[in-house]
Length: 450
Image 1 (cartoon, rainbow, N blue to C red):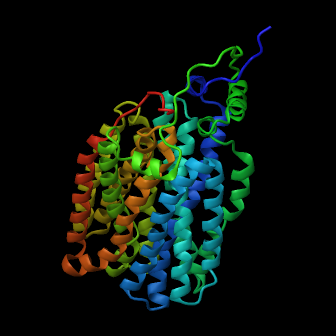
Image 2 (spheres, one colour; image 1 turned 45 degrees about the vertical axis):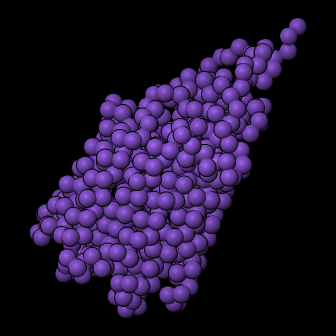
Image 3 (cartoon, rainbow, N blue to C red; image 1 turned 120 degrees about the vertical axis):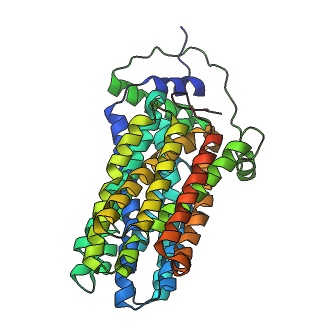
């Protein structure tokens, strides 16, 4: 009598792609999405805190720029290290660790009494935030069936809008309520430290990653639980199929592998897109509340406008999630980036309240739809052994632009005001839209499990 043997990595991948969407997929998506939303809430809160501290502490715009930028310095380092660690230690472990780091650091920020301490803690927050985002998108993409993978990643990204909207609500109701309102906002941001426990014990490890590390039995058990949930029956394997060998195992090989002949064009184009989108998005949305205050609106009114503008992110994600499986990754990404460019120019030249809100909502709609498509395409273009590294390094390189943007905004505002600033943002979106055509569109295709 033949004894069943462990399946191959290829058959595990095929079984994952053949599954219907199950409750376990929903748990992976929502579990990761809540972490994503908490990330967004933290990043969004700092834009409101800066406007409050400028009035309460009397800090300069340069100081405010550094508070934002030091967080992005941490995010750049965190993204590159997080991706490398995710390929070595596992997706779930690193995901949980990042939530713990930035949750504790955000909570501690509520207790600071000076600029120096806040800068140190914002750097630590950035380390956790930067590492979490590419790891989460890689994690979900490795569970998602091929035919719906892009849509699920955009839905994951949509949690960003939930978190940023929560930040806007906190900014509108909590921060202006008292002199310590910004401290209460940071205290609320400590929630991720508790959520770490749910991630660590409530979500499974990626079967694709387990299989890539030779832990086939563990991967098989996890895939089997999804099959049971979907009521899919599988005959036991009686022989092992040929294995595809991972492209990279050690650190140096993984990083250099991003630039070998097969991947160099897609890596270069991906980094350009990440740089341009980060510069324009964070340059705009970190500073919008302060720009509105400078335009003559009081703190509560500017926060109210920002809240309305933020709500438009959700339909942007919804439309992108539908189009990404209809038009494909590259077309959806480039169209939403083009829309972001047009909206940015109109926002920079708007002078009436109606025009500011309308153009700001259009900018939110197109820009966040583009983010959803970008996070969908990024992990797909690399094989499993390089996926975390490739996504992490793209995000890390992009953070260079997000470091520069908050510091460049005050200079550009002095040089030419909001019109010049947002024309530059629009130009960056155009460059990103062109670079998107150098990416590989793997919509509906199986992930490369080398």
